[in-house]
Image (cartoon, rainbow, N blue to C red; front, side, top):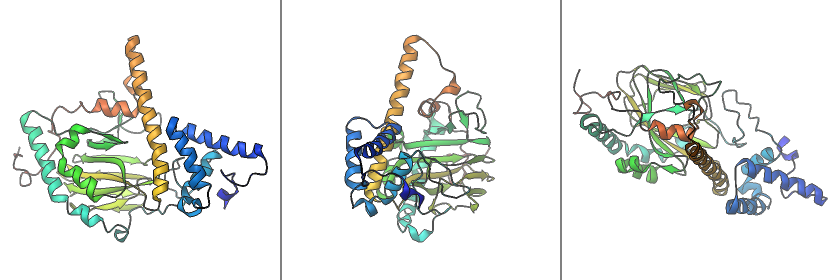
Length: 359
């Protein structure tokens, strides 16, 4: 195995210089993830106690393989043609485009929450669309990049993930941030997320796709998490491609798929399709591995938000404006929260929602 030939922290180094090179490589990985202060000290201790130690052979075997690759500046070559190739990918995790139902008996508990989540969702639409308020949805946007094929919006904020139609989202949790106002509006949904989904990745949201929409093909960031869907309503005419697998979901029937594979979606129905999405840590990762990888991820996200806030404050102080296309992901999410001025895009059948009137 090529991974075993790399220098590893804690391997029997014959000389002090060799050991120094190993730990210098570890420090570079911690720099890569912007780990500082107490978190950095904790990460060093974890590597020494859990990855270098004998217990780490099984308890943290995959995290050890990943760390070895990153210390040597390499990325896992998984050989999967439709899976993303990313530094965050963890070697040796099982992969299915769509996971077998028998791998997640807990999905029945998720499905049991469908009715109350649907009721809560339609109530939010009713209060938003008819009373001048808003349900909390916002357009899905990504940062602009030279290779992005998404549609450039008229407002100039990032790029859309569709080439036709509209894709709107309502964030509850995103990258370890809780959207307090949205969570307060959806208490039953938040309760279901906390009680029915295991080992959450701190990423949960409603995804709404209007009739006639097409989400362009793209990949998720890594294989360390899986995506759980609870389809809520408007599923007729919708299909999802994950790798070379086509899924036509049904309302109330939850399933798990691997977000790291290329995927795209089409909606040819006549009602807005809404699903609840909750990301979870990959089940093959052990609890110590989740703790270690999660700490690194939290440090990078926290540092990224701090850098954005600092840059914005400095520009405001100098009175310098920014091109909207230069906005970061964090900035785009915040600014996009105020782009929708009504819920008229949200098409629901009259028999499902009494507040809907035929036009």
